[in-house]
Structure formats: C-alpha cells, structure tokens
Image 1 (cartoon, one colour):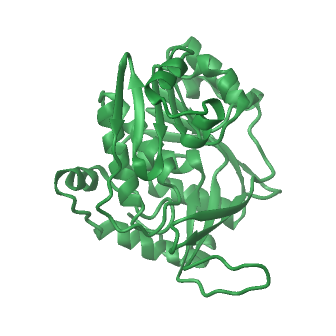
Image 2 (cartoon, helix red, strand yellow):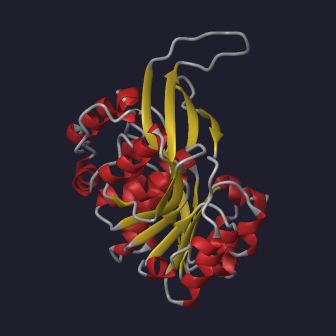
Length: 326
C-alpha cells in the first residue's frame, strides 16, 4: 500500500441553499447530494483517484449507509479489506449545509456506534504502507503511529481543529498539515516562518498551514515557502476542500515532489473540488489536475457524471441502480 487512513467511513447528505434558515423558518434548497465524506475518508478517495494505492481502516454497519460507503471507496480505487462490517448499530452520518451567498458550511453529524480498538489493528497491513494518515490522536491511531515510527512508515495528520493530543505527540508525526485554527490554538500571531520552524523542531519533517482563500505556508528542511490559492474559479461549495488537499499532498509526496511543489498541486485539486457540491463529486484525476495547472481549464466529463450519480442518492444507498464507473 502507498497510504492507509484511519477513520470510520461516513455518509454526507449535502443540502445547498442561498442561506441557512433561522429558527422556525423555511428556505428552498438549490441542490442535494449523497456522497461519501469524512476528513480521512475523502483524503483516501482523492489519493486513490489520483493513482495512489490507498486503503482505510474503520468500521461500518451492514445497512444502506454502510454499503454505500464501501461502494463509494471502491469507485475511487480505495482498498476496503480492513473495514469491519457490523450487523448492529449505526454507520457514521453527517448533514452538510452549504450557503451559496457566503460559501460557508455547517455540519450536524453522528460518529457511528463502532470504533476500531487498538487490539484489532493489523500490524502487517499498517507496515505495508509508505504513509499512514489520520485526523486525531486516539489510542488506536497512537498505536499505529508508534508502530509506523519504529518501522520507517511515515505518519501524516490532518490537524484541523486544535487538539492537545496532537500537540503532545508531534514527535510521532512526519507530515503535519494544519488548519489556521490549529495554528492559532498555539500561536497568537502570524509570524509563520518562525512558528512553523518551531513546530518542525518538535518532530515533523514537513509542516504546512492552510489558510483558505489565502493559500498555504509551509516548511521542509530549512526552506520556508508560501503558496497562493487558485482564485480563477467559480466556487460552488468548499466542503471537503481541506480533506482533498491532504489526499493530494500525500499523493505528491509519494511522487517524490518537494513540499512546495506538492502544495501547489494540492491547491489545484482543492480548487477543482470547490466548483461542485460536496467532497467526492469533483475529485479530479491526475490528467485533469495537470491540464488545470497548465492553462486553467477544468475537464468536467467524468466529474459531472459523478455529480449526477450522487444526486440519485436514495437509490444508490439502497443499491437499486447501476453503479457509477467514474
């Protein structure tokens, strides 16, 4: 395997409206979509569609949501052999609300009833990877990270919100890609070059902080860089943009690219994603990204076939329609 992610698969039910309703108010939605989701799950789907050998460790229930999650990973080329399938309980679910007037999002979610425990981990499977990827440090991911660190497997983390457990275990992390929220949980200023060097000194080889529409900043070795975002797009929804950045970043590192080169590529992937609703519909393949980087053109041929597939969500959840090949 190239990269293995740790997270329970999750179903995203996405509703897009001009604005969210207030209490006791109704608004019309503009678009609806059922997609796979989750910060690690979508990162692995992105890495898989770009061409990496990606897998997921997690748990679902044998219900329509769980089956949809498994099938959606397979559509994106992700190995599901280490996803535990339970007969009782609930699969993780998230209601994603997207506002077109602000390009902001709101989420209501449930984590599912089953979590993989440390004693259930397959050490051989984990050590077969070049990278492992996670969004939180918990007993299970800590055990996997310790094994990885002891055996030359790189550890990547999506530090979206500030989490003391992540900060405490930075010595186990090789690739830290953090949001501005994580960054400002540690620092009260924007002296990025100085502060990223401080984080790097605590363990990670690569540190990147994503800044939304401002792009990202990072450090690899002793080299600090700034990478602007792509702005020549029409934004439909930003759900999953950061998740795909992580998947694309891992893909780039697997190609042997520098962190700065990889950040530019990953920003292009995120930009393409933002032109469609949800985190999975507009995951581009490598050829689409290369074309976008060359001349700004986005080929929507397979993307929009996937958009239409995800709009038929209730039928897909029940497994009653033909699968989508793209």
